[in-house]
Image 1 (spheres, rainbow, N blue to C red):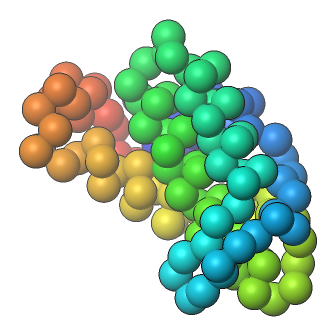
Image 2 (cartoon, rainbow, N blue to C red; image 1 turned 90 degrees about the horizontal axis):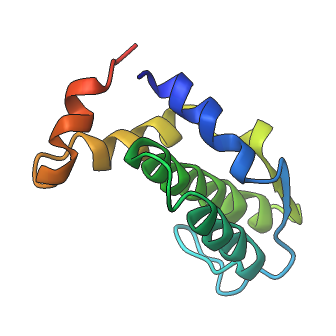
Length: 116
């Protein structure tokens, strides 16, 4: 599978726009967004029986949402949307876990993954 195929299978588990007005302790590289975290938890629950590709992408999408939420919150914007996500960062976060050979249980997935 390719990154794009996995992404397209996974985006249905996240809303296209998320309220981040509940942001706390937002600094340059960190912040807490309860609503965003709840959507991540819901996505994880909904994908319990999906492939590990999808589970890794759930994490990647959350990571990209979180990064953009910090930026938006610091700039006074109280929402974050899928359309705003940095796809290069999302791909980096997804592949960071998938391609890390320390995770032996992903060896089969690595063999199936096609870089574009």
